[in-house]
Length: 460
Image 1 (cartoon, helix red, strand yellow):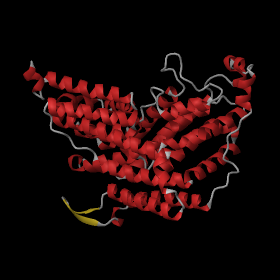
Image 2 (tube, one colour):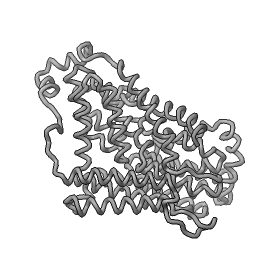
Image 3 (cartoon, one colour):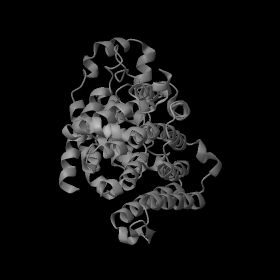
Image 4 (cartoon, one colour):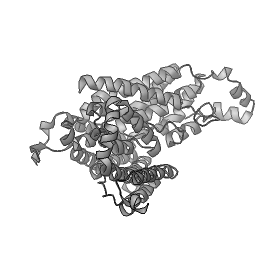
């Protein structure tokens, strides 16, 4: 019995190893991103010291790229550049308040595309709620879909952790799959696929729930003077707030950095070439992104009057570094298991994946929910999909499936959305799964995968 457990390739040992991985993922989700990274180290230790598996390789290139992007974005936030973007977004929404259910999710999606993080949405929630209430629109309609749309924007952003991770994975595996796609190529599929999902979810949201004047539960609560005052006597806005010129300078610097990354990714002849395994090879986009983001962050720091000691306290920095730690632990643990058993997995699962490649999307969706991170899910699952025979075009086409953490309403942006809706229409249902985000989330992801997989076959 002990011999079969210690033999890493035995059926019993493999089952126990899978149990260790799942246990660490499930336990780690109770403690958030950093806790997930730490507890994954526990699983890694067991697999190496108890089962004798050779340690995998932590995704260092991906982690360094994430750090560079987050450093720049956090410096932008401290400089006030994100607030300037929010102000422009609010002006757009208040021009067409009757269109809030369509415009709000498009706005949060676009802000995420520009900034690379869905956490920019927090400032928009009270503004969206204020506009909806003043127009007599049920706040749940624009707010819930705006929350899911902000996270869908990550799959369409050239500087998001997930997009950078996907491009890095494809580049790393290029020797095995004979092709790799650049960030611009990925975005040619990801942007229309993601946007299609957001638009369909927004259209569905137009008629969800009862109008406020017909909602019996809401009308009953309005009889309480304090509740009525909290709903109708407050107003959130950035309109009229004056920002220093340095904030605008920081915003435009960030935009220029994004443009440079996209251009250098699209035209590899603009990058210097160095001797590599296949002769002269252009500088990798991982290094390009790291350099450009470091320089952009330095420019903002020097020329935009940023208090450098406060950068690490920004919401963007905290969320980004949490993602780095999560990617570190989860990806290293997963790589250790899968690289040991990849030949066996190819033999047993290769035919299944070949016959039903959409199974990859389901696995990616579930793992994303477990790790609460699109990037961590991609780093753990996409390399395995490629090695099992999933075409790289489908890996890109199913990119939207990396957003699965809407399934349970535990993600910070969803919880914040519920908290900002003073009417109580955006909520978690009696059975937990019947919450405000699940249908917009599934509509967005399924639409994105369908459109993306079809589009990838045409343009890639």
